[in-house]
Length: 211
Length: 331
Image (cartoon, rainbow over all chains, first blue to last red; front, side, top):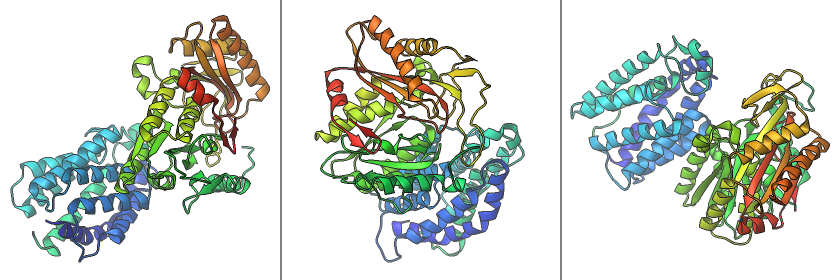
């Protein structure tokens, strides 16, 4: 996948996140401050606005940089800063590569996870977005070469990861303030990541040609 | 709650608006939301220095944007971090091409947002460096000194780094000076009554009448000792002891001393504290090279004070003596 195709994949997938606005708001309102729906939906819309035009030749790293800047500007929050930082770390890892292959995708996801761990001072099990990201990376790393099948395994792994957070106590962010009351609600950030993967899956199977 | 405010949600926008209207010859806004300000002649031909943090601490942070001090500031909501975009706006307007130093206090949200702002600035080919203040000695033990909060030491670090930038030092040198200044500062605070957040209308912490809290943070973070209110001399003794337990000072050493009011404590009381601090130091043969007594880093209407000491070498002494001026600071 070249930069242009990556931008096209985002352009196809991100509009689907608008449908998750209310779900994410409600999840976050239960244990946080309720702005997650805005962060994700407005952030996705901002990325769509700023993506390079279809006929422009662009490096994949540049697409991620544009996405990072747009997402963090749309609605500043801890999650948007962490996600944007993750995207920039991933862009750095890609460097001047013109193509993202399977190894490239693994590189993007691991770089993002490492940066979020380090900057958010959290690990899987803290009831954060990492609880969905880390299992999906596992699935991608050990998955088959076929992209469609890999994506499907990633979605399943992320979903299992998010479901596992329902029984956990939040240890990071505003949700940590409510302590045990966070038990019984799945993590909002993890759910947002799951919805993003599902959107990629739909875009991949429908509107975007395989590289 | 007895405050001179309008809608609590407009508090920050309105005081910033007032400051811009009062000091148009010294400050200008560089973002549509007026949460990024720079000195009126920024970027000039200097290395930029940008700070930022939550509102509610005036003169921190924006009060130190000025000549011989900082280039720009990003202004967060009350006790909350500015956004990466606000920091980025201040960064762009502060960069002359010679780079920008981020100099701010060690708080999780600020660190996160300044890190991201620095990365976004890098995409614009703006070189940034970061120096954190972590001078509050009672917020973590010496073995965890890097996790301490930044408080009054910021003011003295701004003064030294700003003087270095003003004399034309490059980014590497300004960063080195800021690091040296940050490493030379130690602070300790005492709280006598809490601050009240405009939006919440409630006290940030509970402190029964007649009690004091030693080691309190500028957002009301708990300290290391709570007990009956003592005399000014006893409190000064505790504060000096806490600082001296953390930084070695011997007879002949020179220091800058900052006795800072938290917002509701009158200057008379600050001078009562300062008098004792000076006498203890003099008895030890430690020379007060320069003193600052007044409100420099507040916490809304919290009553209490903080003591900051900075150990000076020849370079820091020269920089702390350099002229400076902003709407809140003249020397």
